[in-house]
Length: 488
Ligand SMILES: [Zn+2]
View 1 (tube, rainbow, N blue to C red):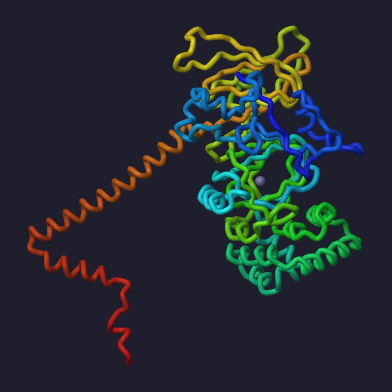
View 2 (cartoon, rainbow, N blue to C red):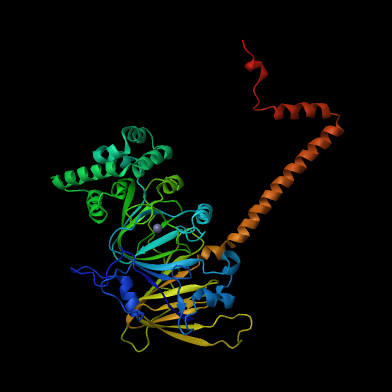
């Protein structure tokens, strides 16, 4: 086990260490303070990064500043089986987020688009990887996520005249006539590319109208007023009507595949993603907007996102909950063990993973015991290691390292990012790719064999001229029929 020192990001949308006005303070700042970092009360603490991304590398404590990447390059055994599927790097980036004001309206590219964007504009798109992500609420957590169902959008265009005026009558009527992706894309693109003065006039009129309404406002209407306070007259305010407003309770999670629009609005969360920082932004941000790339790349799927509640892997792990999104790079495990007054704390075993893992102590105190992984050249004598767990502590577990987590008096809550188990169960990505190629080869092989047999049959039965006529007919399929193209 290695203890890690992990960097924080002080983005403007983050929470301050002391929330002020009775509001909750930043969890990221509390974790940093727990890890011994001096916290500046005036700065927002937005994100804690636990991984190897070049924009925020973890360093290994006790190695005079060696980053986790550098350490892994000389201790490749620690990646275990993962190396053959994902290369010589940690495939996931683990984070905690403290969201005070909304993040940008954004999406993340798929692998092919990420490679294209990175090669064209490496200053904006810093790596060539895709970035599927999952967010698990630590507190009540609000997010905009994916497009609303068709009926809800029709309703919004009918009840928010200012939205309709920016989208335009033709695009709005097309939505009313059809639930197609093309109509949605046209209307969303019309909104996001509308000129700033049209958008500003519409938002001013809308806020004035909403503030003078005598009825109770809907959750979405309250949200757009709040977004307008945070990002005055920004087109992202109106785009909220196109997106699902999701409110998660602590312990619930959403996951985001590539090319799905979203914006986290408020709350504290644990987040995990493929190792990437590629964000395509189009609203609610002072940063660069890449609106046409965003509008062109979205999938335009409609409907509310799936909410994961977490599942218990087995009755022998009563305090473990697993969040498993449909992505290969990661899943997240929470272990929350209650405190006890007995001298020996309650314990939970975490089985070894064939890949590396990162453990964060979110709350409480405890200990983790482990055995060193067996690797080439290792001392065959199995040693025990022990690490003290306290809030903000981050521990790297090399592949094949089983651990036991023990809670001390007040209990302990740890979160573990790990490779999605489905990679190892299904034989994983590289092996799947080989199977697909083999399947294609056999398809070509059988087709060629079939044609050869037909040819042999035709030769053997003197039917070659008939076969030639048949082939000629197939070849002319799709060509204009001479009989019907003659002028009359
Ligand atoms: Zn995102």
